[in-house]
Length: 266
Image 1 (spheres, helix red, strand yellow):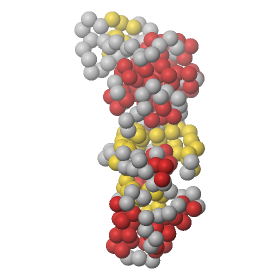
Image 2 (cartoon, rainbow, N blue to C red):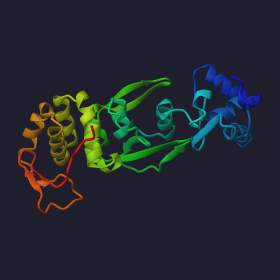
Image 3 (spheres, rainbow, N blue to C red):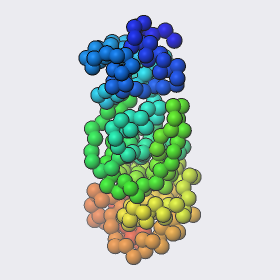
Image 4 (cartoon, rainbow, N blue to C red):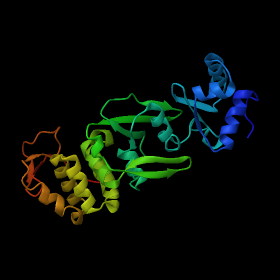
């Protein structure tokens, strides 16, 4: 592949691509190029301006190969693990992005969603891709799996943890109705025993109530028996915590005031 510059920086990037590498740090470039910090920055800046590199985080570079030039970056799945390693943070791909990975792709997420421990991190822009970080207080209760990518692997929430997160952070997932649509597609990947385990690990009964009600609503009562037993003594609470409960019907099974309509898109 012909790089736009034939200098040492371009050759360095070509060598990385030749070894199947798509990311590097400025510190590594300084060592390899034997340049000062400023000289290395300027050489890499020229490649960034030409579109061959993108820098989602200061000092962290992603090489953009020809097939991804239109998007201005690689798919975030290709570099998220190395990016989070550079940031020194545990993570997993979650929410709508994880749901899409598990086959619930009714609507393609408009952003790449990453779950991290509770401390907030500002969103990152890489080319045309926005990476949004969701802080989760119960991060250690999450169950993840390794997913292969063209460049290695990344961490992604299991289907059951994904379902839990979607209900817990439903605003970040487009609201209850959108979550109902996504969960209706995700349900085929859910295991009732693992679903109960995820609920108990997180310990948030309200989320279990809402998730159980939603699964019943979409006709997947085969997944909810154990959840229903677990929440049987829970106090009555609203399905939608942000909406009034005046005039709402009651679900005695799920101990909920049904103050929201759930109509999954077909």
